[in-house]
Image (cartoon, rainbow, N blue to C red; front, side, top):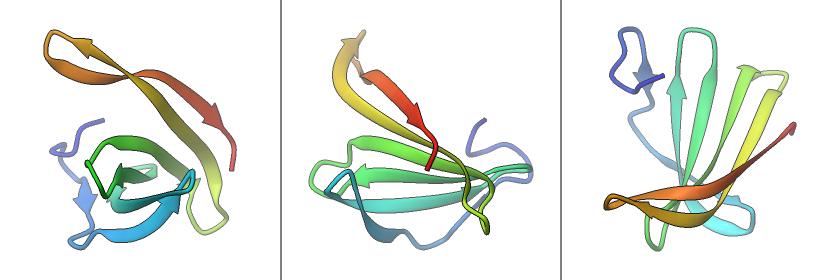
Length: 86
């Protein structure tokens, strides 16, 4: 799953929403079978989590919450990811 794969559509305008109580920019991306919403902290652009839907209209999918950070060879990655159903 990559943003530059053929057929991937990225909404041209980011929206705003709260994710786990934090003000975020939301980037919506349509893949062939799923719709993903990526939540980035407005204050530092950290990726806080994602919500993906196999059926966006019925809100069938999963919520991924990222926490902690690990520096892996200069790349900041989440230390853990918790997946829950919305």
